Length: 193
Image (cartoon, rainbow, N blue to C red; front, side, top):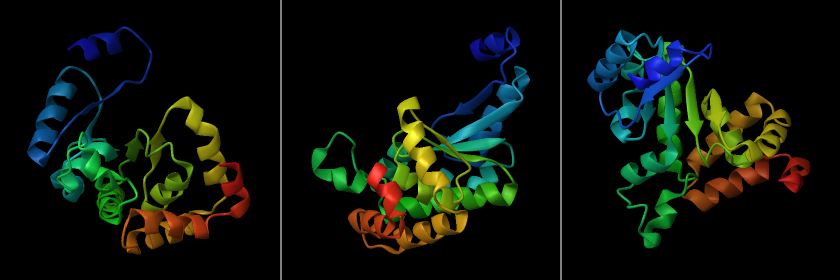
């Protein structure tokens, strides 16, 4: 209600999304409620594997999805974020996590809907290349991250990004995935990152 009231008193284009959506029915229920309040652009956060695997179905009712990579990693690997001994499992470069991101992007493509990634993962210039190659359509990050991410993206073609994404997904672990992409990236750009 509060978001709808704020939206009605300004000229901004307000988008709203539900966190921790697991099923298409949850997405549809939230979308119906938000639209009932007059909010026309409604989405869902993809933070659990069930939502990642059913993105196309979520997007039957939603206008967009945004991937929360930290939560998605935590639930995909059954690794508590507060447990430092499991930090390697929470690395956004984990190929299995990249597979889930690819599944979400594929669902978005199939429904012709935007797929975003937010947070630290989106602000990593090298990972931004992989995310673009996977089919992610928007990256939301801290303002300080914009210049290096922009430099990295403008220095590579979409085909190069796709090649990097494929290489990262074929790696055995996060460190190997990152190393593969570093080898494929423009060395002049890497020097500036």
